Image (cartoon, rainbow, N blue to C red; front, side, top):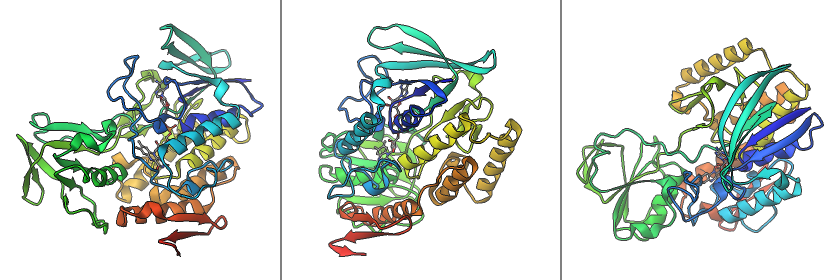
Length: 428
Ligand code: FAD
């Protein structure tokens, strides 16, 4: 009978616990969560920097955020987001949804809140490898080490800012900020803000702050220009090549005086609690060696839920968990270490041949359906319906080209392959 440690009570940790708690081969599930509530990313707090216990604030949620994907593809396969009029929901609704999910599946009582995992280390056991997990009760200040047969790493990857190296950034004489610390637009009132990066947060926040700023410059290297009609005080520019004083110099030879250099440059994977002997290395945002972006190849009793991005996140978590739990209970056997290594090396080469950089090691996007099918086929479990990826693609295109109004669209799933979208009152 297995004892399992689930590290984190965000969507990935909750989903892991939901399946582990009904698994007959599992004796005990401890969910260790450093925060005082569940939900991870979806918890909004005005506080930035550090919390009351001196830990870095985890959430990157800003006040006005509404999902960038419709709720129809944001639920779990066995637990959809409840029906409501709108498709794009405020963060608080997603948080309430996760609370409901945890309560309905009896997960909540198993969460140890205010428990910060400090160290995870493998050790030899009498009949195979075991894990020592050291965690601190933040309220009492006491640390404890507990032994487990399996560790599910579910600590999220939208909390450690990625700061690109830009000549002159350290000496920049204006304000420098990362979107991790963004909460409300008012802090930029009357300022000229250079937003670097046009991912979902960069685009969304750039548009939001135009209501209060003197000017917003959105710097990016998108291959295709968004067709969105931005307000007049937003100008798009190519990449920044250097900063001097308060001046930003751009790749097209132009320059601008700016007050704030606002990095919307994404996040990095970070596992500060993993002892070196876990064998996991993060370099240029590539976490390795992982089999199918999920299983620690050197220590297969450790898995990572939620590493791939540009996916249907909660549904993918569910599939990854089902896959891994089936490997635990013997429904199928994981390949040998050598086979898993070969698979990962082959995948890296194949991605490189298609032009993916190392930094994009876990990017799915157009690969997601293939990824889902490969997990499901190997484990003999159900894959995710194609309609999810179809809606994801459609919604991403609409986000990109119609940022100001795409969140008014309403999606309806017809069956596993088809959907309809109602935009501006018209069925499309
Ligand atoms: P998290 O939600 O980050 O949860 C990780 C948990 O682990 C946290 O509760 C944290 O406190 C805990 N933890 C971390 N370290 C420790 C430790 N050492 N000890 C104990 N506990 C620890 N996805 C979508 O699908 N649609 C969207 O619209 C969308 N919008 C987003 C908007 C923003 C601003 C951001 C940042 C992300 C967004 N995402 C969106 C991605 C979102 O993060 C994922 O969908 C998902 O919620 C991630 O869940 P998770 O459980 O992997 O991580």
